[in-house]
Length: 100
Image 1 (cartoon, rainbow, N blue to C red):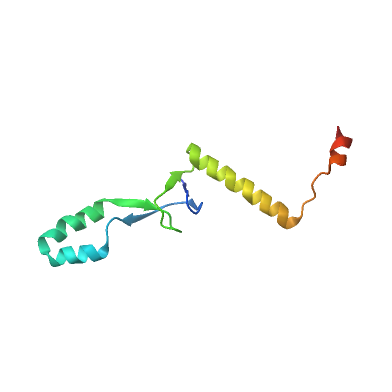
Image 2 (cartoon, one colour):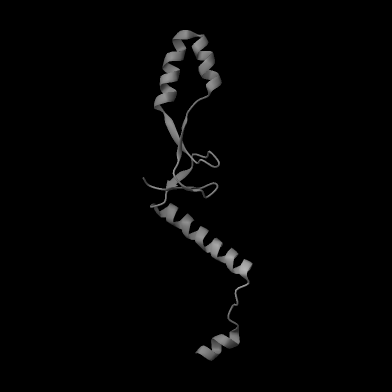
């Protein structure tokens, strides 16, 4: 299966399916018997893909242009955080001039 990227929380992985509508409305519809059947069928047939972390429905495929851009930005941010955490040495202007 394809992986998806959440545009809200940047979760990468599989989506989860969630029913549309509300359970409360479904219970009320079943109390009014004839309305419960079509509402329940509509909820079962119209599930949406949501992020497992934040439950946002703003998911894009990791293979799409937007998905690749989000993943690239995440990689750059992670690299910068790791470099700052490890205090990796950076080249000074003198070292750069010596190598030229």
